[in-house]
Image 1 (cartoon, rainbow, N blue to C red):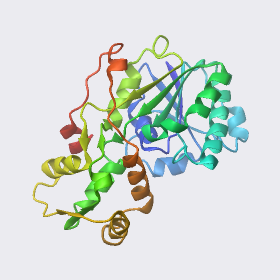
Image 2 (cartoon, one colour; image 1 turned 180 degrees about the vertical axis):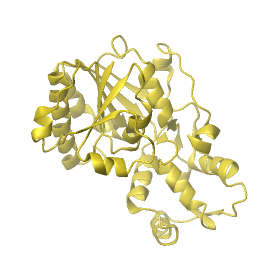
Image 3 (cartoon, rainbow, N blue to C red; image 1 turned 30 degrees about the vertical axis):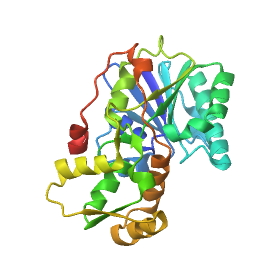
Length: 289
């Protein structure tokens, strides 16, 4: 099976290039700068990388053609969030260019993967997919976790200090985080010729918990001797505290807060009736997944 995938600068995209490629599932990744992507990737790449700019196009875009017809095209959201008009317009441009490449490679099946926080804004995306004439599936996922994810970096940085500042609006959010590797394994196991045709589905992990509970799991499995204590602060002060004392990357902090505000538990029953699937336990994901 020949698979074209875009959106490699996302956490899920990076991991896809190391874990989605199989003997019968050949992954062809599209990236603007191949060398820069390799330099920023900590895992061994198993899929093939192709220099293609989906925004500005160019000669590499015009020349892109696989030796065999593509069976599946996977587009992972490129922009930080679809809720901003500039981002949405850029997303539509790159998606339409991706669709053109899929058609050029005789691919009639496309998957669009977005975050749960993008749910209110996917109508224009669905309109573009419907206009393409390709058979599509829109996947809305809970927060993808694993080694190197935004949540993982956030937690590891927090445990380097003495205190865990939090505000109730974030700490009490319930969500169902899903292992990035589980999601990739799920994508590999779905029969995309038969299932979820022109549908929007939601997928999350098997456990529903709060950020406070996730913090306790990290402490239990990775930092059992940590002296970190929780302290409640107003949100504005908390953000300053994190940036000054924990040196958490500003982009990470913004993305983490944005994700948490729009997360909610997902019921996987809609697709579990179609595909059998077992999730990786949270403790294993935290310890090394």
